[in-house]
Image 1 (cartoon, rainbow, N blue to C red):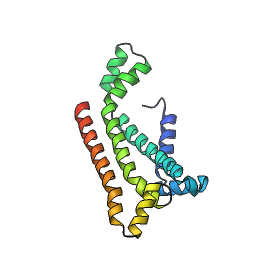
Image 2 (cartoon, rainbow, N blue to C red):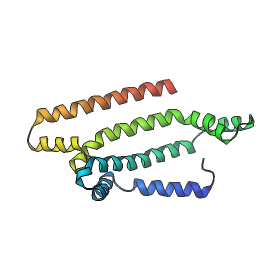
Image 3 (cartoon, rainbow, N blue to C red):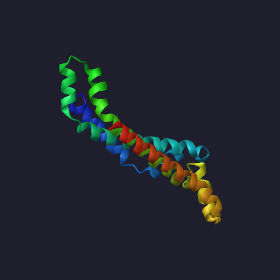
Image 4 (cartoon, rainbow, N blue to C red):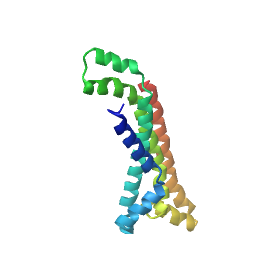
Length: 165
């Protein structure tokens, strides 16, 4: 899908490099850069970098497996590169892109707890404090809404997948 092999190789190397850095290490780097007072900012940036690299890799893999027929049909009808991208490529990628984006949201909903435990988010920090204090009623009050939110994201994802097929 890339305009040339050099562009494709450069993008792949960049994505592999970003994905090879664990999200917890990214948090520590951003916490060092912004300080503990901006822990939520550091956590958000770490999740954004990690998620962007993950989603880009998964979408790139999906794009490489697209059927050539729709692209050829659009080109033969006289469409330009922008129309080819919009109609043939994005038309085929939309269901996969939607599923991948919702998967990334699902992963991030759980990851913010872990990031909070290392000082990069308020709710994760509160959760770790309550676990240490044996405040399981508060732990349940924190975890249950996240469980319900992940369940809702899964339901939306399943519905969108059935509609987009």
